[in-house]
Length: 102
Ligand SMILES: [Zn+2]
Image 1 (cartoon, rainbow, N blue to C red):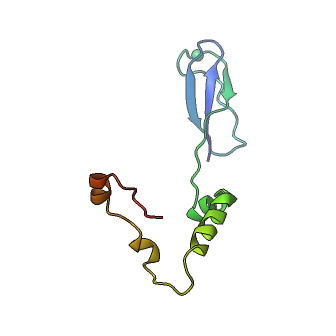
Image 2: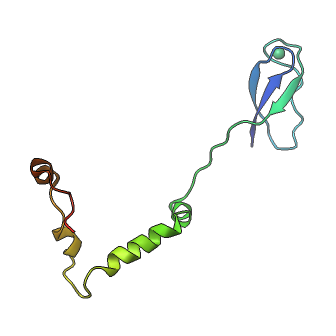
């Protein structure tokens, strides 16, 4: 059930109108000036995206970067391999070190 926006040709007022279906007849009278002719205008739309849709739209370069980063970890290594290379924010800030050791 769509909501359409109309602009009055006479007074320029914009009105949102809820229509029961896409085939419903357009409203004719402007509620602001009670006489003007309404014209349907294109309004902004918003839509919800699922997490899988968001993943599908990720830049393919991102997957290559992840594969490359994972490929640098030694096979059958410690599961905390990457974790052990990280530096706590407090210590890095204190010493001016990067947050991640190469
Ligand atoms: Zn009007």
